Image 1 (spheres, rainbow, N blue to C red):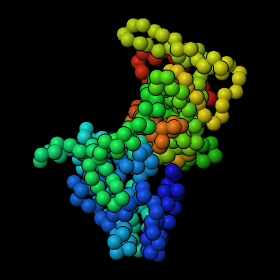
Image 2: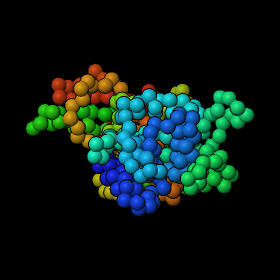
Image 3: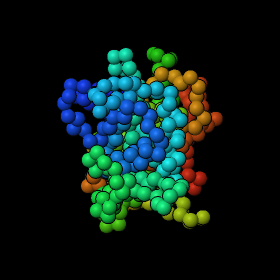
Image 4: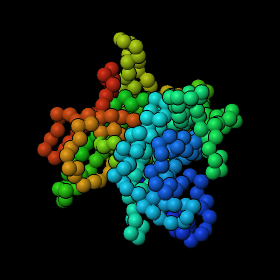
Length: 339
C-alpha cells in the first residue's frame, strides 16, 4: 500500500462515517485522540494479532462515537510510538510502515499504517498478577487470546520460509536531467530455506520493500523483482568457522534461460536475489545508516510473509554522483546480484 492508497482508504472510511454509513473495514480503527499508553498498547496488540498478517490502519483525530473529525497533533507521534513499543514484550510491536498527515477541512488527522505479519504480539505488565498477555480483538472488544485464536494466528507461519540477508547494497544516483531528483536502487542476496517437506511460492505482486533513515518515516520502493541466480558461485557461503559449501544454483534455470517473471518457487534452500528502485528528492542530510525492509508474500500462508530487515551503512567507495550503503555477511564470497 503506497501513500496515495493509504490516504484514499482513510478518506473513504471518514466519508462513510460522517455520512452515517457503516464502516465495513475491520482493519481500520478511528481514535479521537492519542489515548493513554497502557490502553492503546493492549488495543494495538489485540488488533494486530487478530489481523492475521494483514495491513492495519489507525486514524488518530476522528471521533467515531460522535461522528466528527476533531484532529490530532502529528508532532506527538514520535514520542507516542516510542512509549507504545516499550509496553510490548522485548519492545516487539507491530511495525509502523507509514504515517501520514491528512487534511480534512480545518483539521488534520494522523493515519498510521502497521504491518502485522510478525505476530504474535505480547504485552507485558510490570505489576499485577498477570506478567504478560497475548491480547485478541473480537468485534469491538479486547480479551486474552484463547487456544483456538493462537492456532489460527500461528498455523500460517508453518508455511513461511526462514530467510537471512547475505549481502545488500543501496545506491543513490542523481538523474542527469534533474539534479534535484535521485534514483535509489536496492539489491540484495537472500538465503531462503522453505519449511521441511514444503514448496514455497513467492509471488512478485505480494512483495514490498521500503527504507527508513529516521524512526517514523518509512519510504516505500516500487515493484520488487526476485530471481534465482544462475551463477553457481552465488552460492558460496561459510558454514561454521572454516568450512565452505557451494549451494547449487537452480538447475532448471541455466544461464540464458528466462525465469518466471511473476513468482519464485523454492523446493529447497537457495540463494534468491531481490531488486527494487524509487525516485525521490534529495535528503536534507545524507544518513549514515539506512534500514531497508523486505516483505515477501508466501502462497498458502494467509497474509503472512517473509519479513527481512537489512541495515546498510554508508561506505567510502562513492563517486561524485553516487552515494553507496552496504551490508555483507563477513564470510560471504559471492558476487553482487546482477539484474
